[in-house]
Length: 293
Image (cartoon, rainbow, N blue to C red; front, side, top):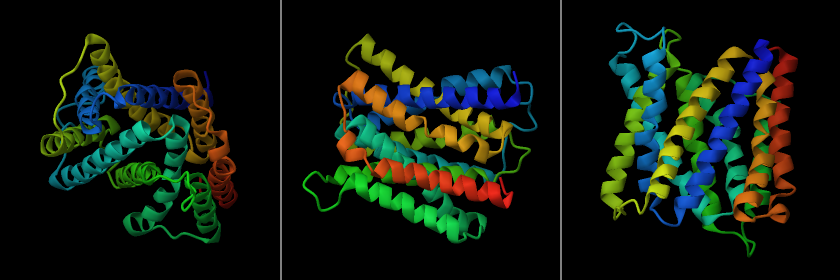
């Protein structure tokens, strides 16, 4: 199998993993506090990480420890992901499944904005145009001022920002640090953040039955596998060649929302979803034309 097909297959596995995670979150969301779900996501998220490290040939005593600078960066990433998890899970419990996931696709535009102060990138006309186009798509879906607008529509945007900050910061790590080690330390701070928030703000609800416990484990495993697959796929190929395939997540969100939750929010999602996808492809086209991707 060629590198292209391996990368696409790995990316699809990431999308499927994230989709199953969010479906499980929505299923359990009405019965458990979202911060408690975040805790279980992070504690069980260690299972795939430990498995990969144990069988990895590139991990050894010399690269499993990181210095203070990268520890701080992992802490910032971890706490930003904890914030993103809270926003994401809350939106899944309050909004229709496809709507919450589609609004979260504003993430690439936050990556563009955050790359200016953090990475020192210069953003030109076409990228700013794409950011504004994507923002217009988000506004169309949220419909602020309309009767159907809800403040919970802001939470997927918060999740997109938190995940985007985490994505941009990972680019500041040395290449010699294995991705799974970055994920390991970040996961620790995610867990720490979720424990602190859960103890401060949540009346912890005991797991009700084995079925719920299975779903909680599944949230952690699928979420962690999704992160690892996403990193792996983008390491194999140029991001501009892979990015269009990420948008398969939008129609699959429609499909899963229809299958699992009998939802069909097409009137609310169009034409905003088309603007979000168009903005993403505009960035990809421009990068290819400039030969930057």
